Length: 135
Picture: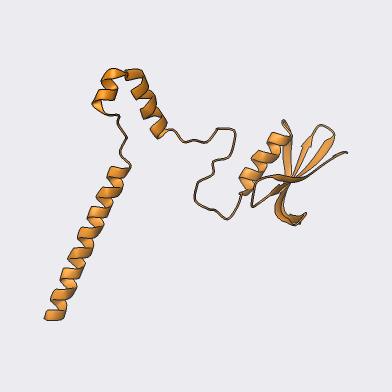
């Protein structure tokens, strides 16, 4: 009987802790509001503070990267980087390779009568090699 009571108390405490944690997470994601004195004194400035609080600091041209460490740049991000290097080209092939000591995405592109090979580092997203030839 005593063991069952202890388990029931532990379960109730766990549920209460989870409920409190969920409330904290929900309130942490609530919109940030400027104090009333700031809103009354400068309504335009308060609106811009609110807008900045919800706007991510990533440009739309660059692939979105989180602050949390990831395993590397994805295939889709490598294609975006390669197409930025060769605008108007179409992707013909994408594969992973080693190039100049970097694990890379090899993105093959074609524009007109030219073929391009863009090697994008999986770790950094930088172009480590670029080749172009006439076909």
